[in-house]
Image 1 (cartoon, one colour):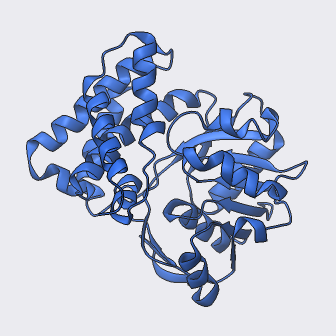
Image 2: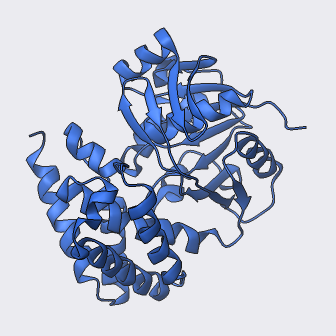
Length: 311
């Protein structure tokens, strides 16, 4: 029987709210922590409206609050903030980090363990990647259509008890989680996928399926994946390029209406996390002397969009 855990989600946007809602449905005590007052107020007033392949429903057994209002420290803290906001979020929510709190990062991009490690001992950090899609259509409303998985491990590589409990909790919510001692290539796979799909959707303002409107969309995405695979290999984290290319093609067909987080940021006038994705790959490419011209170009273009601000 799965233990019921006290869980806080730090960064309750589309992904954080999806995970929080599913975990609450599975019987865990969940607090969503964010600074989006409209989203928090909608959840407090009417619950979280969750739409998945299982149907639409209201999840009411959720607490939703700002970081300074959260507490006491949970058993498990799952971080979904953007990488650039990780340290500020942990600083404002430092009271969520109890002596026994385990922290799981399922964030996009690279560099998250290093940032969390400035606040939490390495042995209490777990890191992973997820392929679950999520969209926030309005305050208090989140949807996810299509399946996903989670690969995760302890940051120090040891089989701690909190890793087992976190896996059990996530699987009790149907989130298809596995312990993967070789998680870094999987994280690089996700970074490669996001470098392609997020940046292209952000720049074109296309939903995922619209990238397939002309052959150039798929071809450009696959070129990004190939460049990222070369960089990952040079870094010692070689991954299966064909598998990521297959994931891109699958998304173009099966996640057609999905708007990646970077596109959602552009549409909302928020700064994107391009630096933790394309920027991190470009930095690794320069360090290893690996060519990544498409990734570098997309990085520079999204930087221009970020600099423009709200339209």
